[in-house]
Image 1 (cartoon, rainbow, N blue to C red):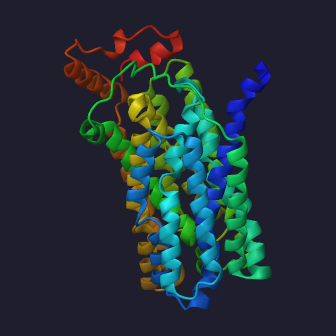
Image 2: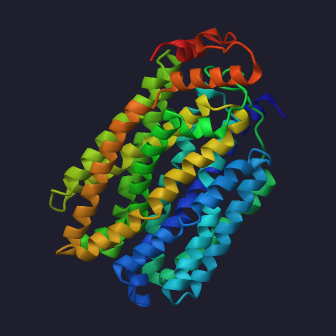
Image 3: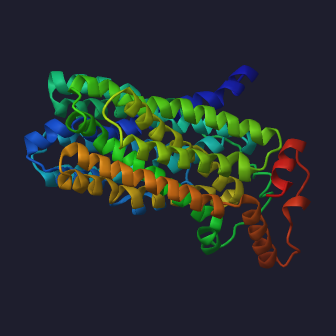
Length: 447
C-alpha cells in the first residue's frame, strides 16, 4: 500500500468505527423515539416502559466483561462483526411484539450485543494510534453515539409518523446488517502495541489491584454518573419533550438532536484541548482528569438549573449543555485507564469500566425516572424531580472523582507491584526508558 494509503488507513477505520457507534446508539434509542405510540399500542404505564428500557442493561455485566476479555485473545474485527450481527437480529422481533414481555426479551438480547461494544471499539482505535495521539480519534468514535441520535432522530420520527413505530425497528435492523457486510470486507486490525510513556513496559498485575485502584474507581464513578444521564435521555427525552413540555412529535424529532449536537461540539473540542495540553507537557492529572471533572460538575449544575425554568429556548440550551458537557468523560476516562494499564490487560479493563458504569446506571436510572413521572403531581413535575436528582448526582460524582483519580500514583503503584512479582527493583515513573520530550514531561511531572 502507498504511503498515503497507509496514513489514511487509521482514519478510514475511525470512520467505520464511528458508523458502528452511530448504529449502536440508534439501535438503543429507537425505543425512546417510539415511546409514546408504543406505550399507547401495548397499553404500558411509564414505569413499565422504564422497566423495558432498563432491561437491556440486565445482561450488561456478563456481556461486557466477556467482551473485554475476548478482545485480549481475538481480533477486534471479528468481535465487532459479531456484536453488530446481534444488534441487527434483535430489532426484527419488534415488528410483531404485542406485550411487555416480548419487548423486554428483545431488549435483553440487544444488551448482549451492546454490552462490550464501547470497550471493544476503543481497544480497536488504540491499536491504530499512539497514546499521545488518541484523544481526537477517541473523541470522534465516542461521539458516534451523538451522531447516531442526530441522524436517526428526525428520520425515525418521520417514519414513526408516516409508517408506524414498528417500521423504525425494521429499518435500523436492515441498516445494521449492511454495516456488518461492509466491515467484513473492509475492516482490519491495527498494529500499535506501544504502552503509554508512564506505564513503560509494565508487566501485567493482578486484577484485584487493577479493580481496587483509586484511579479506576474514580473514572468508573464518573462514568456511572454520565451513563445515568445517557440512559435516561435515550429512553425518556422524546416523551419528556412531548408529554412533559408539550412539543409535537415532529418538533420532538428535531429537538431531540440538540443535546447530542452539543455533545459532538463539546466533546470534540474538549478532546482536542486535552490532547494539546498533553503535547504541551501538562500532566494527565490536569489535562485529562481535571478537565473531565470540570465538565461533569458544570453539566450537572446546568441540568439541575434547567428544572427551575419554564419551557423555552433557555431551558433547551441548559438541557443541551447539561447533557453535552459530561459526555466528555467517555473520551477522557478510557484514555486515563489505557494510560495506566498494562497493554496485555487494557481490553479487559476498558470492558470492565464500560460494563460497570453502564450496567449500574442503566439497570435502574430509566426505571426510576418512570417512577418519578408516575408519582409527580403532573408529568412535567415528575420529569423535573428526576432531572434535578440527576444533576445533583453528577456534580457530587465529579467532586469525588477529582480526589480519586491520580494517574501518576497509580503507575507508581503498578510499577512497585511488578517489581515485587519479578524480584527486580521497582521502576519509578521518572526513571523510565527515555521517550520523546513531550511524552516524558507528561509522565514524570508531579501531580
